[in-house]
Image 1 (cartoon, rainbow, N blue to C red):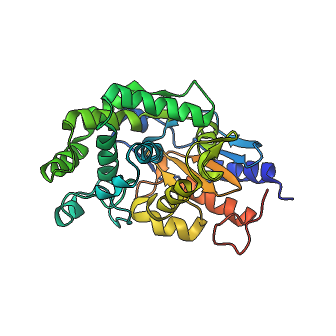
Image 2: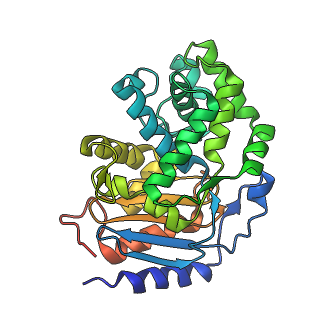
Image 3: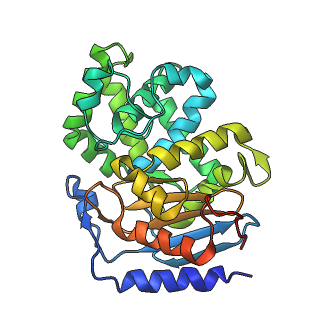
Length: 312
């Protein structure tokens, strides 16, 4: 029997002492102010057991990890029609790149780069007003995490609005191609509020259980097993921007990162995992978070590419 509690504790201690911690995102004051000494990890096993270490109870801005939940909601709203407006291929480019939109006629490569997530928000606004879409997101995340205290950090949302010039360019560019329908300011306001969700590692790992357990959470169906598999596939191939291949190579787990330093990772049928360390690598992914997940997989054998997944 693998001693997950000891492994989690040892990884947190190793990360606490790690010399190279990456660079904290500095384009939003609330993110820039987070000390790079922070590190948290939470592992929720299939049987409901939770193991945490470090700053696992401290909320942080999940940023682009919210794109996983937004995608889940959009697929629930329009199903596979979504793929007429967003691709399912790795981008190989930075998360906020505009380059491919010119040659690909305003169709983003996947729903996890900024352009794709903006289109996902526009899809949701095809049926809801911005306030309703934001409320739907909050209700969904609180439900899958089993925690009504989860909230949006309005200061972060406001700062995103003040600094999001590149996202404004992406949205306007796609609107010029006819792939954004609602007013750009409403789409971006919704997008910025999604990114400003604040969650702890424990809450985030709890929220990821439906992707770990074939679409189920707390014994209740959230999405179909088929949809859970497909979201996990997209997380594996596209969840870390132009660093996605390397992340898959090193960890062998579906995962989604955010510039707040968080990563949600899934070992299907075994565990939902969240790590947080605000220092980023050049691709905008948590430097220590990736190292921690690689070590976790080395110790547990949880990679989806193992001949046989070893349970906890």
